[in-house]
Length: 173
Image: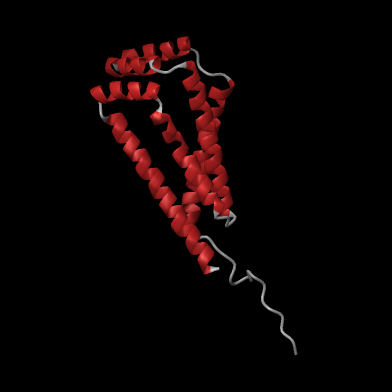
């Protein structure tokens, strides 16, 4: 009597995601999809200088200090930078979304795509134009830098949780 070897992933040994993975994956998919949809209008029709100044004028009525900070910040950005910013946001959201979908399908390369998508926006902070705007923000308020640290912390936490859960699913199979 001959026996056939069991399939690579049988019903009882197929990789399964933990509930933790499912939760962070759904959160990441929703967030990435919102970022992707939010980046599209700026790619299709970037706001003009006049539109930006109108928004700053409206903010002036609510909080003059923040309006002044936003005015300095918007003046430090060139048109090329704004276009680059829109494309980086779009590509970042697309990479993150694709990475989560691939991790859902147990492809470890999805983790690398997700990491690239989450870390890509930090390239923006290496630009001289934005660095000048950030220095003007830091002189008036440290809130921006606290927000930046919070973003880095959350991105690192999600990358760590995805790595942990994906490795757990792949090694348990």
